[in-house]
Image 1 (cartoon, helix red, strand yellow):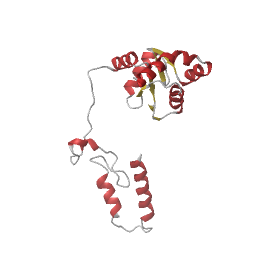
Image 2 (tube, rainbow, N blue to C red):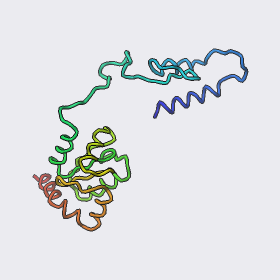
Image 3 (cartoon, rainbow, N blue to C red):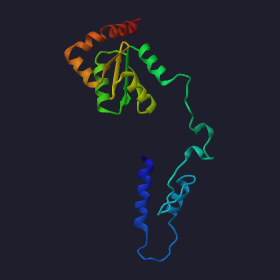
Length: 185
């Protein structure tokens, strides 16, 4: 996003600094810098901006800052099954409970936080394969998806409805009590 804004800003500066005459004039220093810093390779477009950026191939990037693959031996199906089995409340959402990236995800988190239960969450926006796996696992197309005690409950609308009817309190009651017991010991 910052790159798009800076490119647009530079292009605007370039347009405003061009002389009105058709005489051949050398490129301004800012234009030369933009060409140099815009990446390795790629065909320049009409104003000289390179169209591709390959940061990972940058020979000046120290190995500590190179992207790394975080692959594991577990499949996404196994990860989802393990999450649901090991955690009493799991929410697959857009963002994280502390920083939701969707109003529905934020609503679901706020409702669950009313009960003081530990919430385990995964950001489905960080990995599209995880998102597709969760959709297939629950046979439910939208997010957030909430699992309580190993069972798929639904999305934010269902959680809110259950909260309003008092059903969620019954469902989460023993989980909240276990959390309180663990805190006091």
